[in-house]
Length: 156
Image (cartoon, rainbow, N blue to C red; front, top):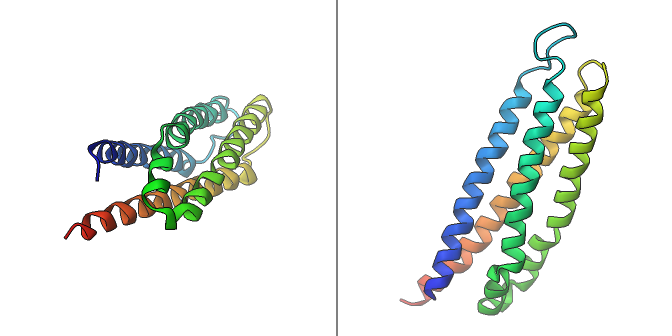
């Protein structure tokens, strides 16, 4: 396995750990109900959620760009032609996850403008996105590690 490959594997795995931390932070934020009208934090709850979602979007955009344009997935595909379909499937999910994140940011900002009570549908949509992202990152980790460990094992 080339040294450059080890470096990108470590970078991607670290970025996945960082993303999991962001997902956990967002999930923790969602654990706390929005304060009621008149309580401290009522007007800033949705703004806080949108800030976390914007931060997540920016990190996802940067991370996905590295995976797509940094040569990592191309390297994997060249080194493991049998995995090209799995690699393609992982990459195909990126645009929709970014689009869903942007949609949630927009909806959260609209929600922040109003005086509506707790929006459980918005909360469920964010949870769905967090679960989808967590599963996506797990699948990427499994794919990368299985291919790279397979390479290491074949050297025996």
